[in-house]
Length: 458
Image 1 (cartoon, helix red, strand yellow):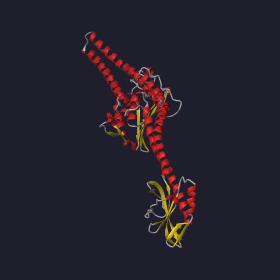
Image 2 (cartoon, rainbow, N blue to C red; image 1 turned 180 degrees about the horizontal axis):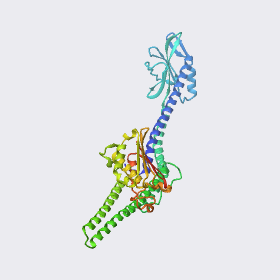
Image 3 (cartoon, rainbow, N blue to C red; image 1 turned 135 degrees about the vertical axis):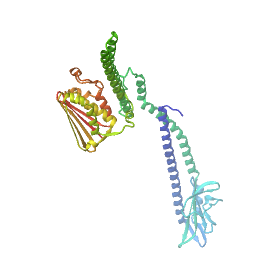
Image 4 (tube, one colour; image 1 turned 30 degrees about the vertical axis):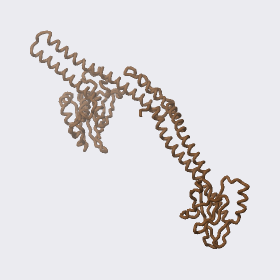
């Protein structure tokens, strides 16, 4: 059964209401039935006990002492709810009975306990009956049987049952219409959400879902959708900026490569000229390859794919390996390197991501250090975590640039330091690599005095 959202809400509410109504109506009928029978039983017990005082026992004979008065009352008054009385011996023989029984007699069910009420029939009419023992000098002499007609009570219960059976579907149908109307009113904001989201396109991300007046689940849904649109918009802007920056970064080496090749083909040159220009071209190709590799890393969706099959390495060994790669630059700038480590030197980190992070950070520290500068690398093991500190005494970063240093292609004061090669992707890669292995990175810097990086591996 395919129902829209509004009708589904009403239908589910209808099912729940129907179940509750069935229980409620059944409870009502049960209470009324119990009340009717309890009232009849109380009246029967009262009449039986009352007429015990109007019984005479002579030997084996039991009879009513006020029978003539009952006959006179019966002739003068019409009994609406008559009480039938009958006296019976121990063997079940009828000894006396009330005048209203006439030729009929009550059948006593001796298997029923004394004082227990039960349903039976009198001349094919339903009656409620009870029998009580007649005692004389501590001996049981017989029984008094009392009964009242059940027709009126059965009619009341039957009418109640019919009323409930008619009222049930009517009330359920009315409740369905009401719940459907209320459901429509309740989900009206959803129609607004659908209309707004349908009108939003890639070129129209500024529009937002109107927030409902009540701060309920629909308000939270609208807020979440608006937040999602904000994030999508920001992501698209970053994508546009990233594409623009990537195009710009790749255009520069391509232009240099084209210019070099054009110079080569203008006229014949000696071998040395060709070798020099080819070497310059290869440098530009290497530069483009590195940019492309970094861009692919930043654009990779499945971060875990990069370290499948990669092992782990002690962090001290990894730092030492990276420092070995940059020995020529370190010697050229006459930089002093200080590496201190406690037991954290044996802490294992994923080789792929650990290498990416530490290589970029150490490379930055070397590139931006002054000649004869100093770089301190410190490894500490604290509370199950490995803390790595990399501190240089280089040019530093301006305070206003610190919040955006992890943005792709961002470089602080690039025009003031043209001699430092870079494309602004290093710290972006470090940030993404840290997120991949749940590492933490914190960067502090003071312009003109150096930069301090704190890495935490778990």
